[in-house]
Image 1 (cartoon, rainbow, N blue to C red):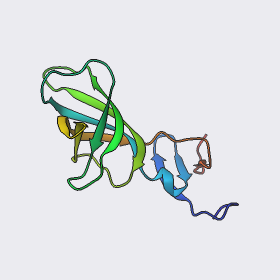
Image 2 (cartoon, rainbow, N blue to C red):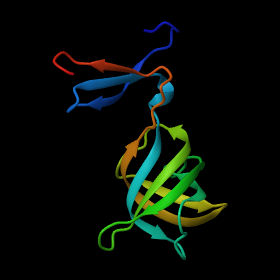
Image 3 (cartoon, helix red, strand yellow):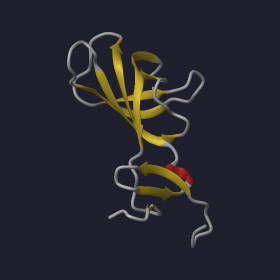
Image 4 (cartoon, rainbow, N blue to C red):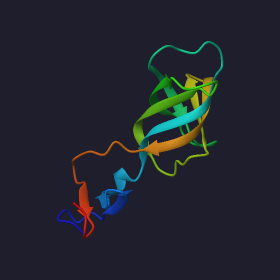
Length: 130
């Protein structure tokens, strides 16, 4: 429990740093998705582009910024910054990128993260941590 009465959840665990990050329910979602096996339907856009992103077959499209990331070999990668947090996104799922109603690209999610804010986040240090 907290001073504002809102429940708190573990939103991140840093084993090597011996830390647990606790935050509010809105921090349970992710707003950055990284994927590999990136495929563009047509010419690849240059730089970061505003697109729609969908991570579930029946999920809603979310406004996003997507940028291809330089990678070794033929495996193209992408970083997608979502305008809002989504819950239940995990590696192995697909992220599909849209320009209006047209599919423009897709990738397999390899990593998800949340850009934590300083509002209401608490870092709990385990005994023996620095």
